[in-house]
Image 1 (tube, helix red, strand yellow):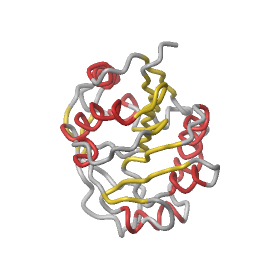
Image 2: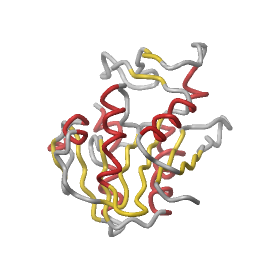
Image 3: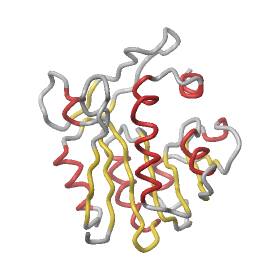
Image 4: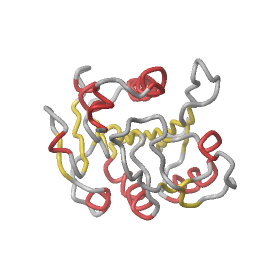
Length: 202
């Protein structure tokens, strides 16, 4: 169902805002080699590849993602050093849902980056995604609200405040952060948060 929803362009916020937002941020860093972690059905890998970028997409279901260089691997595999490649950017587009596995992945990313490389993450904006719940880190129930009846059993996800994200990047050794907040043209609210973490001081 997710593959069909993405390829048939059924997710309104992605079509209006977030897909182009992540592409623009990645291209602004002019990478030649990219690792797309949690690539899902592979849309971002294919989009970047079409622009002449060498992309490796990794996911636990990457074999069903279509043409391209897709490899089956979990976050734990990446964190444990299963990949010895070096890239200019590691990109995670709405693919970081857990706690310990995400922490371990972020800690492992610097070893995958070339000099001046960047970790680029697009995720739910902590303010808009918090809803009526307390603004503190913690597990939240998932939701397929707005999706079709074929979507069942949404996975829980780990909510992080903006400060928590910043602390995680600092603990992983990143020295500089840039934040982007793509705004939805209809709601005038942030549709996502895109964080770029590097070891370069701006």
